[in-house]
Length: 417
Image 1: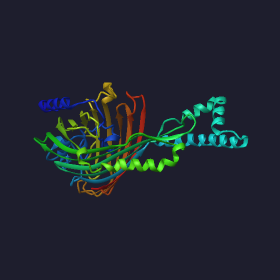
Image 2: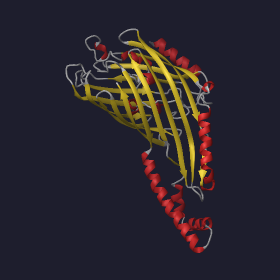
Image 3: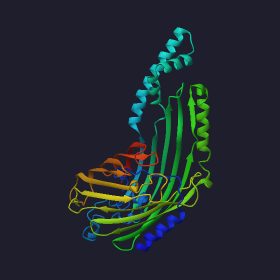
Image 4: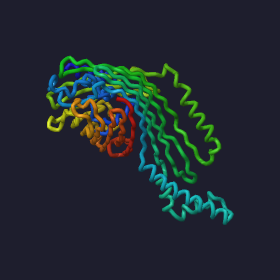
């Protein structure tokens, strides 16, 4: 066990370059518990956090044969899902809308007064701002108002010992700026990551398993653009140019980067499991970005007195991870790498006598802290086929935790079994 972990650390140190963020799959279950998931991995999320967890599928819940594994009831056939989700900072939408309305009134009053006095709108606006400095403050509140949005699409399949996924993560961060005189729209960042990955796990004993996976990733980025009233006529041409940029190299396979993921999992006791993973070990740059491998270690505690392995099953997890250990460009303080999370899942409606295999309604509640920022989530599974999920977490836009928080709210619908 110690030699394996040491080998993973050595490989990570040999390939680590302080660089851009790797393609990130946003797991609703993982994000809602603060992304502390390296040792939880008892379902399809093992594909993204720790492939060694694939050995847990269809084993958890069988207390008679494997009492050290605890009481977790899981799907008999594993997991196969199609997911579609989206996210955005809703509070920014509302605040920006209110500021935009105020600015619209200001510009309309300037326009009406300029017509009545027969003077230039720009001259009148500058005179107004000089006489009323409070209006300058109002315009400044409009500066660089981010309206970032995210989209995710996933196709996943995980069975005992094997799992794979095809997924897309896209993000666009347009912003509104009041400007000195004329407001304008800009796009600060825009990227699309597409990933195909798969891997397997092997359990050497009932307590110890390892996993390895391979992935192919492609990233497309668009340069910063700005659009204002003066170049309004060229907006369509600008958007068409950006669309051509985005689609020109979709099938350029030379720009695809390949990588590996590694993971280990060990069941210390019936209630405590520890794990480690080294992910995103890419062999070349991704769209010009050097990717730093992600080394994470963690543990999961599942107290037996909270868990119930019947048709009306219940499970409880508390997890802690030290995540992304090699990344020191941002969140360089040690505590900013700590993630904490807990979850409670309860079957609300089932047909008893089938060991939880016929489950009609299940609810999961979760919460935690990701890099110092709170996270939370809720999931409702209906007839084991349709799942509605919602999660919120925060990303750090600045250099250290607490400098510039971006709060994300993401919803997702999943179909599958």
